[in-house]
Length: 353
Image 1 (tube, rainbow, N blue to C red):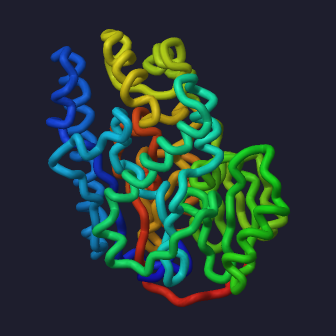
Image 2 (image 1 turned 30 degrees about the vertical axis):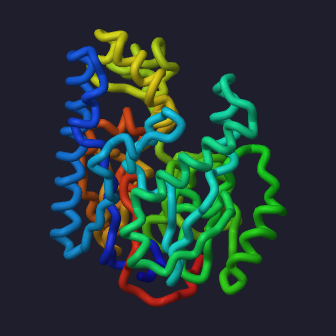
Image 3 (image 1 turned 180 degrees about the vertical axis):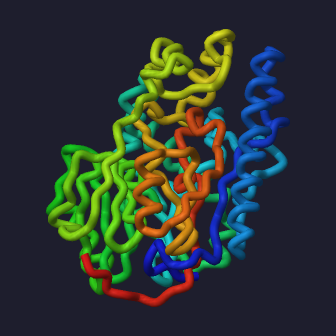
């Protein structure tokens, strides 16, 4: 397994997986249970369509493993999120699969602030156990790879851009110490030129170098230091809150997530808040037009049509394939999030930036 440039032809790719409908048998209210069963069915239907698209380009697809005994997915009485977004948990950089063995530190601190039941030590223990369980979904996949464990919070598929002999690491918060990040990644990757990008979150939710010379971005960033000669296409910020269908979610959950019809059944919100709070993100901040999976230099996949993104891609001779992901507003995930490329056909190259 090797990945040098993330636009090289894709050969092996992981596609995520949600819990099956029968997982939700523990939900007593039948209407609420049927709604989550519907989400499960439609999520897998959309994954199957994505898999068919990838296989039409001769891509081998791997899936995470969900145990048939669902109690194995409980940690300290809490359901572990299903492996919908493999991008968050590992990344193939050149000939090694880097796997963070500890939870993301910034995510952990944010989650800790939202709860009051546990001390910091108790929360860390719980978060570590939960992280280990999340990685177990991919244990069979890891057996096929040259795994490199790491405790660096800045290494995962959602934070690192792989452009040959140049690697781009996304910051996670406005408070990040850029000097410390640079020192750490330079020690881990001494043979590449390592750059820091001011993403303040998941890099793949902010920008995508789609091809040499083109970046699609939502950030108000000119990238002159990192990509001084490249065309930068800025997509407008999310209009999630402006859509009438989403206004209920702004009132009921601050725009964190959306399921069609959830505002008609308060038990849906209660169920998410009680059992699935760490399954959801902050979807009101997300623009899915930037979350792009590249199949090869002339074909990419998006979860929804975005006029600015698709026009830019067409100007560069790139075909945008739309693989709808109906519940992206619940899982807070686009096509790049729900996949993870393990093997691409190419050689290590110095990209002109």
